[in-house]
Image (cartoon, rainbow, N blue to C red; front, side, top):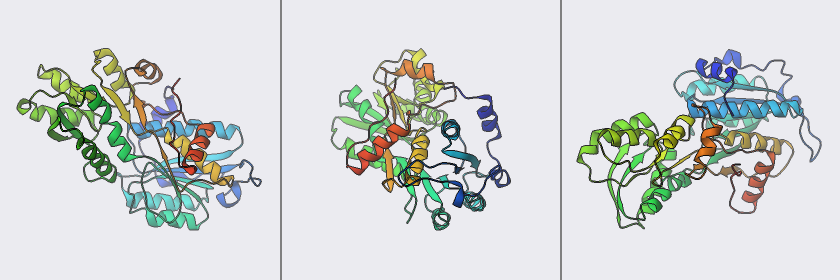
Length: 361
């Protein structure tokens, strides 16, 4: 799906103030949504509070707005709002924004938190106000609300295992770290180190702090490449395009890398002809659609786990062409969650079974 002009204008604006966060024509959340016992809710007012904006988040927001529009046409949603906290990922400013949203009494409040700890009090305030709270893309310990996220330890595994398979379990690698000190990166890295204990023939020649950013990863690799032996793979937190460019600039063969899942990176991969087992994997911006349907399930009185952990996006050589044809330059690949696949995920979690990502067609 290509971004509309409205989405691009929204992305250029980056952030809006809390004053523009008010619902248009909102009748109030405490009485806005209505559902018969065991039936589908009607007329819900939904607010999405986002801690900061980047390319991945813009894809997430686009997915949310598209699905919310479809649900509005069905009468399930009466109104929806997306607001971005001002400032640079400030938990204090986002908390203030959320309190402003609470004054509008939304039925559902979806929060992508700037901090998994600092926002706990305001999340619990929203729950106490009888608002259906969904915490998205974060692992938050709170007494209320439902968490919908990807598994960060699984992300670490998915960002390493295909590389180890490609080099047949032996050789020199460089680990590309994410945002060191963050909770997701700690789980991500710990899982990778755990896996590597079972691969004695794999030598970690270096670690770089790529910060899940292609340009930063390129700079980090360039700084140490002259001192490194032959490198077979650079697994870790994406950055594959920059890493390939770093090796090529030094007239060295590109190793197995992990590409970003945006259209630009995937097109680079396709056009470069790299076919050495490289791959792309990243957290899923489509989780917001699943989160929206989780909220609807809660409004319907259905049983929902306190935490809904979903699969990541995974792209291989086999489905690369499909994704390149699907995505615009700045858009990120997203699993195609809908009501049916979300319900299947909920049932799988309640039954202790593995959640399956929607099939890419």
